[in-house]
Length: 590
Image (cartoon, rainbow, N blue to C red; front, side, top):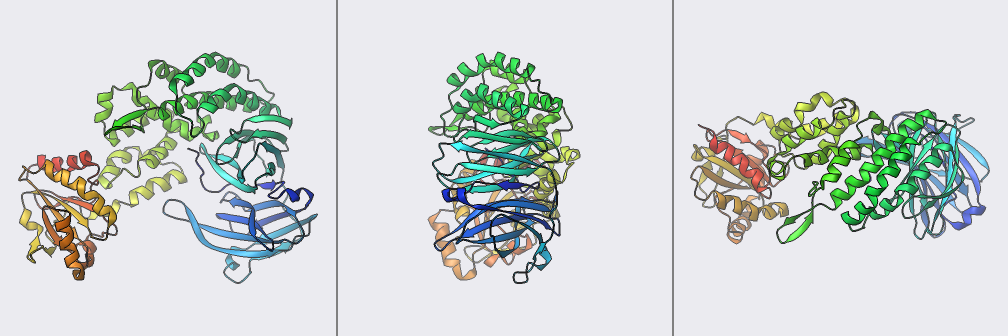
């Protein structure tokens, strides 16, 4: 899966754009600065008598505060600039506020603008025109795409911590395949031309000029009219790996046998190619050797994972783990492993790092792997990479992969806190702290008494948890209007069935339905044949409020001494994991 993280470096684009008639358009250059550094999205739009359309979008992050557009101008069109001020949300950047400004574009002109976000909330305030623009060196990347039958975004991206980060996107209408980016580059490195289907790697240095033709389906370079030694070398590598790219294309049926018949004989050619990378640019040579080795391994890892399947019920389903991997691949991928910090300068670096670390689990036998919990797997994966420079980014990948699986603070503590020393950058800290903060408040309840609330049961009798002293109690917080709660009921019944002969376990349901809906609550208990003790907490004003239940379903566990063992248990759909929590408390003495 391609990854698109938020925002980026300054860029200028020049696009032979949206409508075929734009070929005869005059051009206007819009250069600008933003008075306050931050995260912004700047969109240039056009409007005719019949429709409105987006021409281009520019993304700015805190590393820069200037931008430039080249806009093809037509008569009888109105133009505008929309600026969105972004803020940090829980997991990603979100819109804070925005402003729109009309633009009068005549063609063959240079406009220098300044944006002041502090004035955006006043009607059409915050944009002013300046006499001069900032100067910086640029790279021109232009060309066309063959066989373009549909429109869509074409983006240019940079590499940040081994991932792709969008700089700018331009919309290309069906039938118009031309593009031209003019990108400020003061430091050479890899960039990517990307659509929803492909990512084409390019290498840019200040003042380079590149003009090429791309295959619409794969992003492979068909030809070039202007290039550099570095990009000529990249194109040669693309031709070598092209048969494997077709096999791994999205939607293609994973076929290990066909892939292997091409991949294994290709390995000598790959080795020879790496040894023969000798452009005049020594920095590129070293980095591109890493890129080729990474590509070669990532192609195999992608195929092995896509073709791994396991039996779930009567069906064979795709697996999230590598299964039935032939020994020849284990040996080859181990010998070709890429653990250089150079991979952080490649847009595929983070993906490879995570996949290879997970792949090393195939060194264990199936029975051992099946018994490992998340904490044990992360320990193994983190130990698979000896380079401490890149370990922090592997930790970030593990945080992202497991964030939906971590149920509570104790799981976060056991899985991730042993690696807190690798929380070394702002992006990793944001992911680590964001997940931790979801659970840390729960520590106020763990180990404290559960005897501090009393609720009525189906007969109107008041019940306190003290009634179950000496037992392990699993509480199910739910409501009749909660669809996800009802989805867990069949799984909960199976867990209850597992403990039906164990007098040391009690199951208690607490509904957050309003008192006025008591009959609905009673009817659903009967309809769903709910077992255990069922209590009503009207609108959550007693139990729900006391324990900060802002979302349901929620499962909580009380130990034999009447103290909270856990206030955020795994859902019953993950039966084996939930039963481990119950069994742990059963095994503990009073």
